[in-house]
Image 1 (spheres, one colour):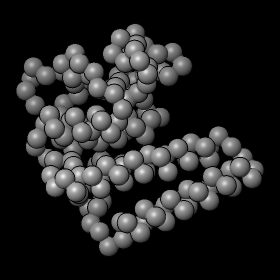
Image 2: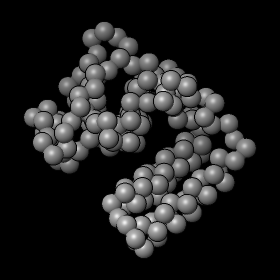
Image 3: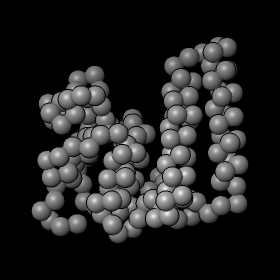
Image 4: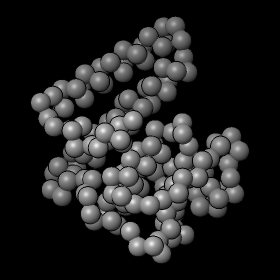
Length: 155
């Protein structure tokens, strides 16, 4: 990365979406600064760069902001061509986007709901999570996936 490029990630330790972006930045070897946000007391920086949704993660690259983790990752991949994250083949790229969205909608959201409920409603959410994991496991079966991710990123 050229020294004149400023990259800031407005995120939070609690956000799987911010971690997703941070992993992409690390995979690319991009130097960046993390600005920890308090979602209950949003910083002027977050309000300046993401006045519409006021959410994290927000990537600020040379004073310009990009929102939503999957969009940020595509931006990172297209802007810094080395160490590609997404496949070049359009079919495989579409499938990667599908599975990322599947994980976001079927696993991340249900996990949030599991943590926020109890009793029968929580049991229902746990069942939904197990079903989604079985689908994902079927897709990943016999495929090389995690071995391409450096071990320091998995911690």
